[in-house]
Image (cartoon, rainbow, N blue to C red; front, side, top):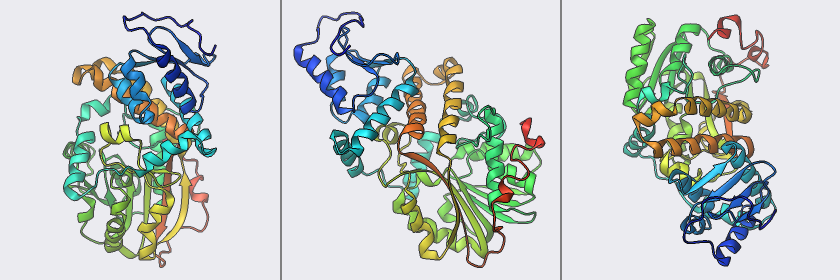
Length: 422
């Protein structure tokens, strides 16, 4: 159906010119000829509509802007309602990411796009800037996040689906249990957590493994919520929630743990991160980092970094090694949970859409569109793009607490009877 006009929309006074139609065809080639359709505001169509997915540009300016940094302007135009998507948004983005990945591998035009993206640098994360960046995203209000995250642990990180049919609550419980088993926790261990979120991991550690936790977080609203939950559950004597940057950790601990924080600080701060861990971890200590990552070093999608996650820079495994190697930490286990995050994001997106009316009352329609494209794009990036989810277990050379096999991770099954009702 290349070049047809069978997909009719309302016809504005400024009908497309022959140049507009030519540019639409060039844009389709630029993004790798994905199995979707592109359409102009009068219905002029190029591409493949067999999937039922059609992206429509509503004005000439939207089309022209898309030719400059299309991976950035897509989010801008969708949020501004100058571009719309017929069909499933996640699937549409998966097809675009797959096409871009394929053409980049062949060294085509998308490779040039990739190099331009890689040349950009995210905002630096000094102590003050980190606080500003976290406030911009995590202090949107606890009531907002509680609408679409899991109800038990309020986890804004990748869940672990031992079976695809698990509920979000079950999968997040399984993720927390997986973290504990990887660390081989035992009663009496002292644990320091960097980036505690709403306190769910610390509560799980204290309640199920009898450890003491010092949890650092620079989001004021999250810390207030975490402290209240700990008091309600009678865990305040086991957990201390500290409103401060993890780089200011004080004390000596058996275990260092961080889930969903490293992607916010940037590789430029990894030397300081390693030094902090080295200072606070005992001579026989062990640690665990769970982070969004990438196949190779490059900044996060520019639209997400500018409009959703300021300062974020998911690392490659090579970049993560700069945390461990200078201090002689032994990396004992590395796992990639990429498919689990794609499924987690599908759950979040479904719940977000179910509560869209309530969220719109908190913010506005543009906020809804921005977060919908963010959640959808993230799901697609984990499914087809370059985003990964790394879990890295490390230890001091003298640590004797990590078992020699991974049997502990699966026996008994992660979704034990005590977890299945979560």
